[in-house]
Amino acid sequence: MDMADILKGAKTIVTLIIIFTLIVAIATIFDLPGYLATDTEQLSADNATSKALIVYDPGIMGMGLRTAYWMGEDLRTRGYDVNLSGIRSGDIENATGYEVVIVIGPTYFGGPTGPISAYLKQVQTKPGARVGVYAVSGLLGDDASREMRKVLEDRSVIVKSAGSVSAWDRGAEEKSYAFIFSMME
Ligand SMILES: Cc1cc2nc3c(=O)[nH]c(=O)nc-3n(C[C@H](O)[C@H](O)[C@H](O)COP(=O)(O)O)c2cc1C
Image (cartoon, rainbow, N blue to C red; front, side, top):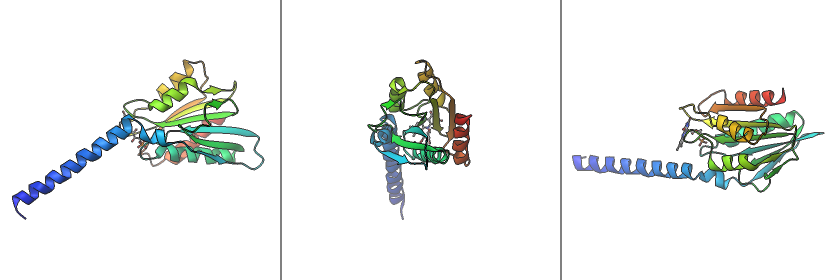
């Protein structure tokens, strides 16, 4: 292999890295995973007496979605019928039929994604409902849940719990159960 081949190989690798970085940046800036999150899934409890809504923006790596499942399963075992809904699901506009409402999303550029902010600015919950916000962050450790909480409190919505987890945290599953515990206190 001569020098020209090595340079050609290096150029190809750099080009691929630039393309990959651009794709991730565009997907993040426009929150493409959020726009594709249109599903609602139901987790039904035996003899359920209460209902919970978990709204998630999945994020690029899907940590928001995984967190939603962990929390949803925990709530189901506590006797809640749970709706797990993507941030673009048609079922989330009116949240007044739920005793528990939790909104989960990633932290990009220090804050929540556009669809999550827009949702928090107008979601209607019933008086006395337990409302919580939860953010997934990266190595920088920024916490979008502070801003999520503020958006709700500026509208006089009482937030029972605000929490966050790093996507790198090996105890992420346990943290999501601890968050549900804090919501139930
Ligand atoms: C373009 C971009 C910007 C990000 N900005 C931040 C940031 O400001 N603070 C932070 O703690 N993490 C940041 N992260 C890391 C994400 O919060 C982290 O990847 C988290 O797991 C989000 O969920 P996801 O990986 O499923 O997209 C950023 C990630 C990307 C791709």
